[in-house]
Amino acid sequence: MQRYFVEKHFWERNTLQIIGEDTHHISRVMRMNEGDELIAIHPDKGPAQCFITEITDGTVHCKVQDWLHEDRELPVHVTIIASLGKGDKLEQVVQKGTELGASTIIPYQADRSVAKWDKKKEPKKIQRLQKIAKEASEQSERSVIPEVYPVYGIEQLLQLGEQYDHCFFAYANEARVSQFGTLGKALKNVQKDGKVLAVFGPEGGFSEREVERLESKGFSSIRLGPRILRMETAPLYFLSSLSYLLEEA
Amino acid sequence: MQRYFVEKHFWERNTLQIIGEDTHHISRVMRMNEGDELIAIHPDKGPAQCFITEITDGTVHCKVQDWLHEDRELPVHVTIIASLGKGDKLEQVVQKGTELGASTIIPYQADRSVAKWDKKKEPKKIQRLQKIAKEASEQSERSVIPEVYPVYGIEQLLQLGEQYDHCFFAYANEARVSQFGTLGKALKNVQKDGKVLAVFGPEGGFSEREVERLESKGFSSIRLGPRILRMETAPLYFLSSLSYLLEEA
Image 1 (tube, helix red, strand yellow):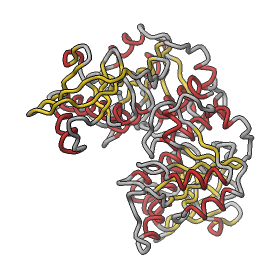
Image 2: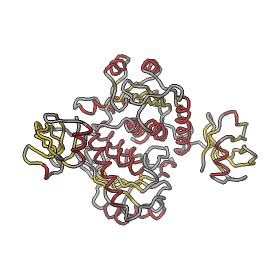
Image 3: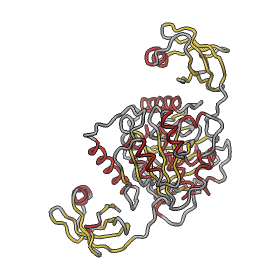
Image 4: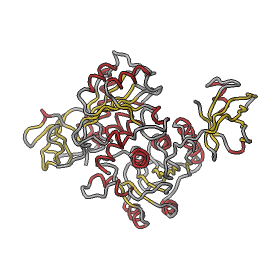
């Protein structure tokens, strides 16, 4: 059934209103009418099965039939810090990272990021990534939309790490050495409801300065298998492994 | 160091010749010259560190310095059967599936595949996917290029399954039910050097007929976490989890 995230102030007891782009999707794309059912997701209470009571110009009025007690959320809070990359790499990380359960995604201006974002265009780009996250949340049937932050620099990143239980960074070189601690070892103390932060480098990897700074602040380097992964594949490996470990092992 | 796969008949004891597109890459893109080093990969013997002895018109002559004893290959043989999908989804599965260690990738004409391939255009499309697999193998520093087969139908797929130790199919509905066997349970008997086959449905999922046929032939349905994954994300979750389990747990 089609799912829509609806902000808190559009709910009133057991009724709610959907406005904006979603109404277009409901009435034009899905061609739904009064009496048709959909799932509306409350930011705190989660998904509710609803039916449409009225469609007026620009507003879809719904009534809650049933609160659904689904739990599709990864049992840990994971923040993915993804370096700015070429082409649509960041879009891929946001879309597929959302499907795989990330809580927060933060673009990072790495020393070796080939891509640089124009400060003026940044708000539009973040807005676009946020929209991708919303659509991926609906598609993957999550009850939370991951938040996409504005671009971070190294100092902000290191400071943010202080609020987390586990801080990792993925370093392509780890895949090239035979002596390493396994990812399983790194994740073994991750507990339910824990806060995990993982930083992923750009195409050219982290600079020495970045590695030093990250290590000095207690970030642990992790290996994601012995093959060299692209910058947009690495976060997907990490999130899949976390899901496997916590939800499927 | 730059890596190139070189077919068997271009090797002679400790010398080899590189021809075709790779020579353009070596001399024009990388601007390498006599004396420069590269890694050439022999189909059976694996990677060797080499240096260039001569560049003639269209041929790069190399000499082996050292056979490298790397092992970057997933310790199981995994065949990914990916349904035909819209846009570049199959390209994504081939590229990232290669990075994540797949051995074989087979496009599948599923009952609900929206995309249909014109038989006449199929050889070109497979050739293109094979090229993507080669480039991804070089980039991820693998010593084997996964093979991409021509499009399979359900009967071919079921017959192929007979040669495998473990046959799975990923069924979006598994993510929607609370009663399920975990992926960990499904994978617990997978042993080193075992042969694993996994089938992934198209955007609209498998038809009832497909599910019945797969189950009747002993294919087990697997869940890939509780979230609904896109058709191109599901194989990446599966391969990452296998890598985690066998290489990083």
